[in-house]
Length: 192
Image (cartoon, rainbow, N blue to C red; front, side):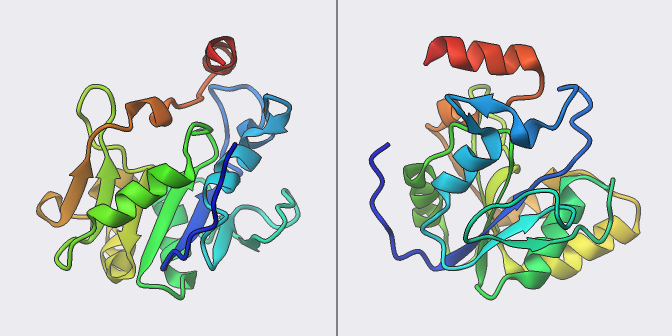
């Protein structure tokens, strides 16, 4: 992969260590083209000045990434976002999971360029035109809202930012192929 360093002004966070119940084993460590899925996603974000891995301590080793334990284990990606937002030193945070190995530096650059002064989040659109919050940019100002949602029992990541305050970016559906099952991984590998 050709990759040029970028002077990004946002931090990165990958949420890992979930149940992987549909996959049957730890998705983060599943191999795609000889490398774990976690490594593919991390590669797309290596231009970020701060890189956070939201995961159980000691479960993964990722050079250049600081492991931050999830403070609400089992509560899903919204809880991972809460932890990441509370540890990011930058105004903006790129947040994603381990199951999107098609993400690239160009993808994150496109989202960064779509930010506005009024936006709180930037999400790509999938092939069906739906926002995909598990590969998005989030403004640190969302932390109180995310905490309030979690305290109220909410777990849906798509509610982290109010719809009138997020920007949608089309054209990246191929990068958003999610790996939820071994069949998804096999299909991805058969296309490469």
